[in-house]
Image (tube, rainbow, N blue to C red; front, side):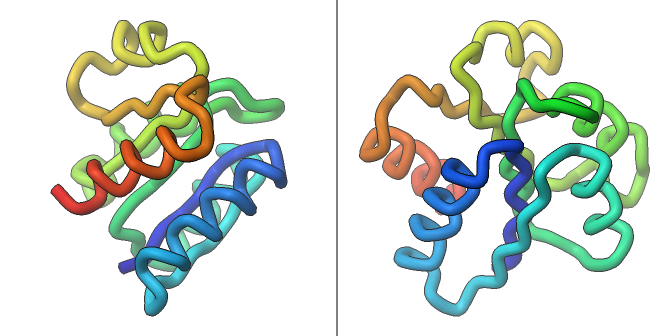
Amino acid sequence: MKFLIVDDSITVRSMVRQMLKNEFSESVVVEASDGKLAFKELTKESFDFIITDFEMEGVDGASFISKVKSNKLLAKKTIIFFTSRPEAVKTIFNTTVHVVDKLLGKEGLKNKLLELIKK
């Protein structure tokens, strides 16, 4: 499996990377600090999952995902938002993305993330 993690916090990116590597040791994990860099990564290679923050400096998660969704080749990618504002994401994207509440804490994040990936 290939994952793209998009978050302006290196701490969050590292935590998510470690979770994924612990559970899926053969996976490829690529990181980007904002939506602009993430979209560049998507033009270079294909990913099974995009895990992104909602609120970021530069190109935020909502703008990034809107751009992904408007691209026919990328529109069907599995997208998981990490956010402390899950209702805002659900309002914007309805049911086209999955949402994990950052306020769940590390163990809650891990459990919810793994549940969505394994579906």
